[in-house]
Amino acid sequence: MHRASCIMYHENDMRVGIFGGTFNPIHYGHLRAAEEVREKLGLDRILFIPSGTPPLKTEELTEAVHRYKMTRLAVVTNRFFELSDIECRHPGKSYTVKTVEELKKTSPGIDFLFILGIDAFLDISNWWNPEKLIGLMDFVVIPRSPFRFVDLLSSPYISADEHVLKKLDAAEIESSTIKLKSNRDMIALRLPVIDISATRIRGLLSEGKSIKYLLPEAVESYIISNKLYRS
Ligand code: ATP
Image 1: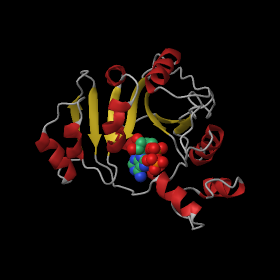
Image 2: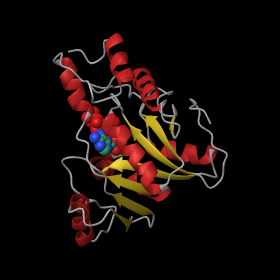
Image 3: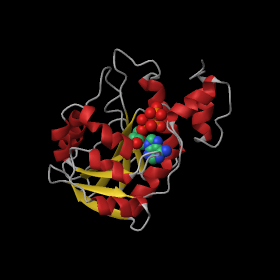
């Protein structure tokens, strides 16, 4: 299937990783992590979902249309990557629960897994209806500097064995499947950490500095020609 603005999968038994974010802008930290998760877990596709722009836009959040187009430029070169505008085609706040429910309704044969960094997983208590969210699908949690897997002990949504999390941090094991309180699985997956953040990229741009080698060239060109992230 070609990357389409409205994703509808029909094949059965496909496993698709959902990778959501503001992607403001998308960078090699996102892309490499998505590729490694896909390969390590044998997923059929990764579906990138840029978030919408809330009406009361936070200061640094670039319009959804730009973030969507940059994400498209970044994923188009990988045949396993897809892009969805499910969140950014509507103005307003995106609710992950609603997004996932809609995806499951339109693609009933797909086994969706939700991919996110340790930082984002620790933040889900601030998302809308987290108890419902953790019951909708399995999760894949990946490293994100400066967090460590043991930090997950503070999450109210898992009951993890500290010993196992320490083994992940010490690179003694590659992954561990941990039960979420919803009885769904959370796969904690060790990956090489690529310490790039969109915040840093925006900071460099606002200081007029180079962002080369932090994100795909096509995205860099888009940022320059659209004069994004200038102070
Ligand atoms: P910002 O700096 O603006 O907060 P970000 O770089 O953290 O942005 P997001 O779009 O907020 O990017 O992140 C989307 C998802 O990608 C989150 O689950 C986050 O944990 C993950 N992520 C972001 N950067 C990396 C990275 N370098 N390596 C692995 N995962 C990452």
